[in-house]
Length: 280
Image 1: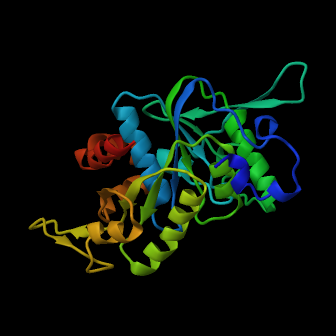
Image 2 (image 1 turned 60 degrees about the vertical axis):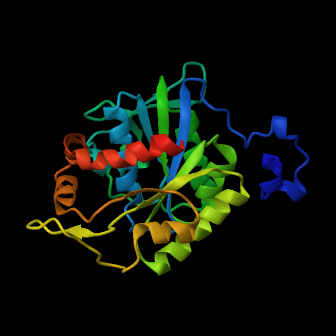
């Protein structure tokens, strides 16, 4: 199956796949591109992206993060760089512009629309084609340098941006984020089926907000479902990478802009990297 087979423009297109401008080249200095996706918002997809990026950086890899959630960008908040702005410069003798990503505490390179606008609260009121065009430019025109991993924090659902990323950017695989509820699992499965139809590998699922842990006895208490994380993963038909608890200390560190520092200092988040390395 070629990329053309799943392209929505296939019926009215006479361009050969080899010359299609929709198929973006893989940057020669970026080794692996991984998407992080979910079927719906509010499940902690951006938090999981930040944790995985931080753990990869901690392990010695060179890491970049592309905030692909154009209308709801949040990666700068996770890394505490939301007050900074990416450098934009014009290419000499050209109409092109290039972006210099902002580096985090551990050297992760981040590009996000919130790092390119004057105020992070300013909404973007754009239609699909404009949004996908901006996403494409952020991927192709950012000075990533040498990277072992580029993580793309994708918007929820199966819309234009997810389709663009899966069809146009050479993504090696997807990490799916879910929460322990049948309703959420059903919606997340739509994303998994979409990826499978587009021949994009699903690396596995991270179940977020899986439980709360008693501070006195250490007992794990399920909050949203009596089913185990393994049972939910079996329904989705993909490997379980990690189950992450509801953690007020992590939430507090996010509000202080210190989530990256918190993840670097807590070994409990190393499980996600071990599973990721196993299935990549």
